[in-house]
Image (cartoon, rainbow, N blue to C red):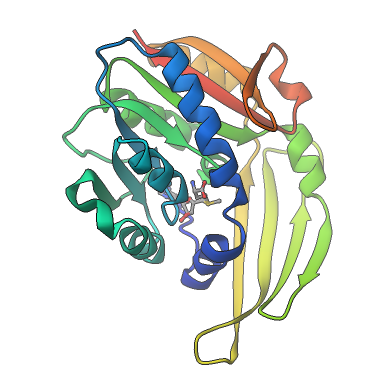
Length: 254
Ligand SMILES: C[S@@+](CC[C@H](N)C(=O)[O-])C[C@H]1O[C@@H](n2cnc3c(N)ncnc32)[C@H](O)[C@@H]1O
């Protein structure tokens, strides 16, 4: 099984400079949850591929209990530091999104910032769905986003961003038709000791066809599969997910 935990420095860069996505999406997912939930539902969250805990912290502040899993040691460490004031309300565990057993059930499961595109193949995605399903309470939700093939085409690019503390370089490659896209994230980060440290992750993204993702969700007993476009302040339900670069998918247990 090939897994792709982000390296320590890339995780640090995501935590410090690229937290806009989880911070932007957290209130939108929370609002969707509030609209959809039954009154007596427990408020607990499972964050699959949680990164350094930005989204989890938002839900902790809303009163949820939060469990996050990620394969990166640095992500787990940063998430623990960020949420230490919440005590036992927060729990961060090193685990694989396609193979975990926490012996606990949740009302809401999420996976954000195209994390599931980093799973190896459809089999790994299906195993992730099975694990999430097993960890959901009846009528619980799974909300996750994926880059579509259209989004991957945008990734087929080269960009550099330079500030005093961070130089970041993105090199993406997608041929527009195969199942894999490639992304190299590299650069230099000014660390505490005032020197610049080089970082570099070579990542493979899986281009999942959304109709097949829906089929696998349904085969694994998820119901009521819906698609959403991420807005400036709320999720908007849409019909044709492949017309977006990134789609938010919501599926329900029972
Ligand atoms: C783009 S980051 C997103 C982090 C977070 N969800 C967010 O919204 O900021 C992807 C995360 O997925 C984690 N990851 C990748 N493959 C994984 C796997 N098989 N199991 C668990 N975590 C994984 C990486 O370590 C990384 O922290």
